Image (cartoon, rainbow, N blue to C red; front, side, top):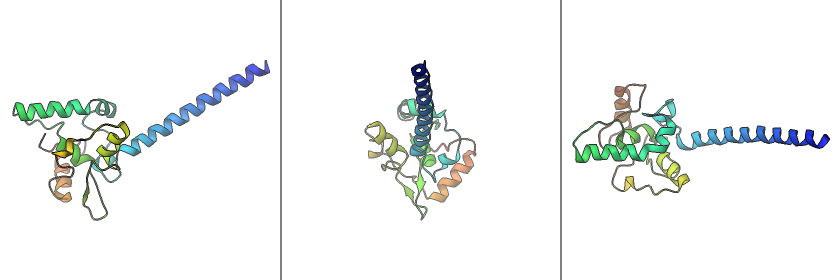
Length: 152
């Protein structure tokens, strides 16, 4: 009987510890990928729910590329420029930090997932305009969603 009580107590303790560890890991994950000082850090959602973006962002970007380059359609909901504008962070002098650096949004996630990040071999890893212009464009797009800059 005493062994059963101890066993139940250990199982309960394990479940509590597991729940705590999962919650701590989830908090670390959010902190790891949403970089402080970016517009994304101030938002509750991206252009799609977070889990959907994590799972399907490459498909969204590829679809955007096909629509833009091959079909001439410039719907910018999933544009790479919009992603950079929202997820970019700035240093103390308000200079944008390249989004593909290991401690920045794209760089941190791709490093964690051990996936090659070659988008920025061709595409700009910082906004193509000064920070003040990027922030003004974001405000013009509305506070409830991510900025939808041009590009593919």
